[in-house]
Length: 351
Image (cartoon, rainbow, N blue to C red; front, side, top):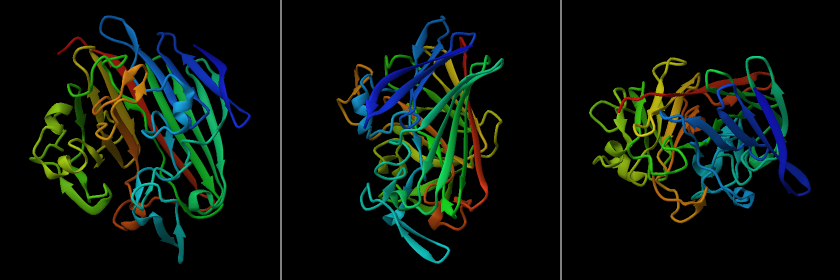
């Protein structure tokens, strides 16, 4: 196992460092201290060809806007907060409005545009990097000074584990996730429509016209959201269902997970034979099939388009601050936020 770090560029006089770590199987991960962005995951296909299976920009300047949030850590709160405001402990807080009068993915800067402190590590059984950032009281409108650590660790079982940890000196909403877009074909040779997705979930959240949860939990049975036995993305996005049409003919929905750290999310691509298994302790996963990806943006030398990648955003439920029957998203002062999601990569020859 080894790790290499090199400076990619500078932002406001501060170095942007790329960390590349490799296990003994030649699986390779690259991430940067700008937004904790993952820019590369190289894994083999069934013929032993190593290719990048995540969406990334070639030039750093594109990350300064990064409207699709490629590869980034999202915070303080992943997803949308209705009307960009909330009440907590008898006080009303107003957040940055960055989508239709609502607050999305932490606001204008959020964690995805922050420059983090990085520290690489190499141990006998894993290699990776730990990123740290202090979000000051009032950033994007949120209360409290929040210290955050995000750790990426790779082992020889081709498992990439993302661990999140945070503390705050005031009560504050906090729900972190990673916004990597996966495309298991490798090097973006085609879209994700023939990927097969299986999720152990019997409920998903209904969304309103602004893609914000209404608070209603819907049963997946007899809908394109029933992924318990697996469906191709194509089957889902071509289904005649109002919630599929609402978000641009695809998925952009939170699913409640029935189980945890139990192969609860499995993505399979038949041509390459690659399988991604995601396990988490989070209450849910937001499945986003790239329905809003703009046409023509250069992503790794390929023009972007709908369905070029799929996000599997393990997290607390969006807009939980406004829905008391959702699991709470409040990190209380003096307590510790902790969350772990594991991504395991494997290959199979089955079709």
